[in-house]
Length: 64
Image 1 (cartoon, rainbow, N blue to C red):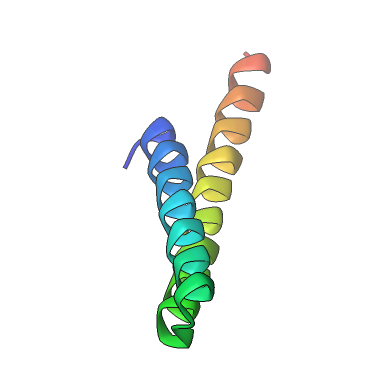
Image 2 (spheres, helix red, strand yellow):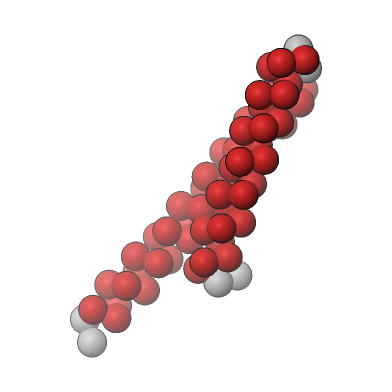
């Protein structure tokens, strides 16, 4: 997956997780709330991975 795709997909998953978590809280569904929280966390991790890849790429191009 490319850098931008990691960043975008991660942030989309994070947003979807936030929505699921809020919906779970609203309707009192602990399972949905937990799934949303997990999805949000995984999305954050993927986005951060893309951010790190971008920083590494940026730093390697600056050295040339």
